[in-house]
Amino acid sequence: MLKRLAKTMRRDERGITGLETAIILIAFVVVASVFAYTVLSAGIFSSQKGQEAVYTGLQTARSTLALKGDVVAQSNGTAVDSLVICVANALNGEPIDLKAPGNGTGNLTGRAAGNSSNVVVVSYADSATRVDDLYWDASQLGKGNGDTMLDPGETFEMTIDLTAAGIDVGTYKTFDIDIKPPIGSVLTIERTTPAALASWMILN
Image 1 (tube, rainbow, N blue to C red):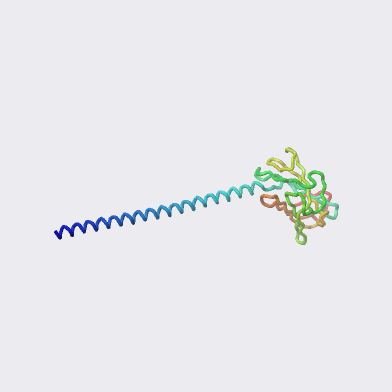
Image 2: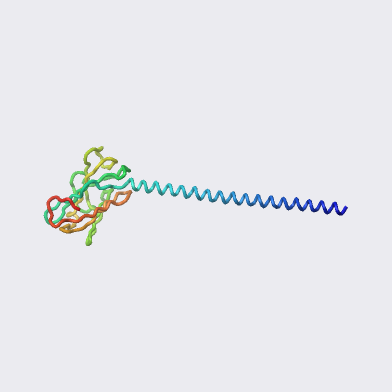
């Protein structure tokens, strides 16, 4: 009788031990599932952020101005009066608003006021001077739809006034022109004036 009871108790202990093992295994599976879900969610979130960064970088690159051709300077013999450059849309990307107060009329009045309508901002800098938000004029060259938006495939000629803004650009002068669109990188143009100033010059 005692032997049978002892055998039964042993069998019951085996059953309890098996149940505990099953519970532990189930707990491991649940924890592993939660961990896997967390890792998967983090991976998806990182992928989305990476995709957003790529799209943002692409939009920035596609909203950038590109210099087309030479930088031409007009002078009065002693100082450079204005600069004439041609710009296009880099990578055939987003349209850029080249609306200016002059807008093809040649009306340049030096430095823009605080309430100017310039969307693209032009700045001048050299070793001793910096002037922000210059007045400039723009007109479409060649084929285009006639508006003030620089669309893919279009070319605009920009005329940047210097003397009316109180900038004296004489001989052997190295300077930078920064053209800043509302979205995209800054187009920086660095040039040096020659030893003698002619009426029209191509700057290197």
